[in-house]
Length: 331
Image (cartoon, rainbow, N blue to C red; front, side, top):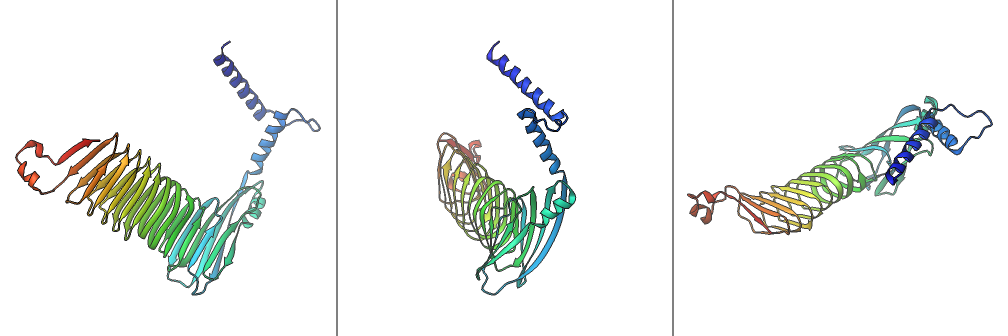
């Protein structure tokens, strides 16, 4: 018997043992049985202990003073955080919690033990979720804050923030939507989609993110690793350092600087100077107006597309088929 046949035989034996242990009746009282039996009995007991679910909701209004400038939300390990800026002078939140348990009453007891703890430091108010150790809970927290405040979201697994003064992403993962931030959006995001529509400026580190940024009034500075990034209608300068990321920059209003390697970069209708200096990266630039430009890459295609650009070169070659305003080069 060869090694391959031996491995296949062992796999079938293991599958048979697992199937038997999952379907066999419990051991008689006083009989400890083999370790595999105890293991699977404990596993089945654990599954039965989480058979029930319960949900509870709590609300609270927190008075705040004029000195408050920032709200921090921490400890939302599972669930989703939503922060809404409004014309108000206090902070209100609604906490919805789902918990598992062996029966509905026990599950409800553990759901009610998830609470929001407050730490007021004068200029900063921290809202921290506290969970019991038993079973599993998912929390969905909605916070209404004065729109003038900055918000820090720490380690949230899902996020929606709108109409606040600034936003800091402290290790946010999963899907996040951000809208109408009057100041800066900064911090780090990973493993999910990030959508920013309306911000004063942007400075974000991205890791395996699918990110879009639209209507940014100031500068956008990004560090992108292994993801997709699209920027549209950014008024200020753009600076991006990428690695194995796909970058699309459309209608930028300021200067553009892109560096990195092993990705893709597409620049559409730049209005100011652009410099793309990358390695092993495919580059495509579409131009409809003359701007200073430096394009460098290695081992990949560099494509420059000229659309509606009037020049002596275009007029001189207007009667030639080769005057088509598309050109390609490879570095």
